[in-house]
Length: 128
Image 1 (cartoon, rainbow, N blue to C red):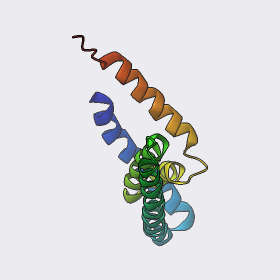
Image 2 (image 1 turned 60 degrees about the vertical axis):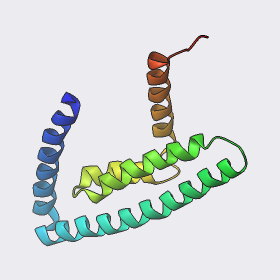
Image 3 (image 1 turned 180 degrees about the horizontal axis):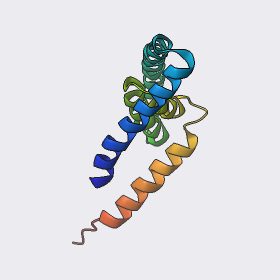
């Protein structure tokens, strides 16, 4: 919880600094235009990728297989979509990395490792 609070304070402060820096270089109206463009383009890309991940998960379930990687894709796309929706260049970069299929692989493996660790630590075995 403290990491979340720290992130909610530090990330906006860094984003404001980047806005001021970029506004000094390209002008404030271009910064606003870039924020709007990356937000719209990013959310539409996240929507498209999210529907594709949903279809892959449904196909896996219909074929009697677990939808593991499709769910990992969905988690990455959701987090990336939230990041893209938030105004800022740093959050947009992180969002695009999580939404684009060829860059989300390392994050899927990190999420899988984290979830496995949590499951191993909290696993309950019932004996009869």
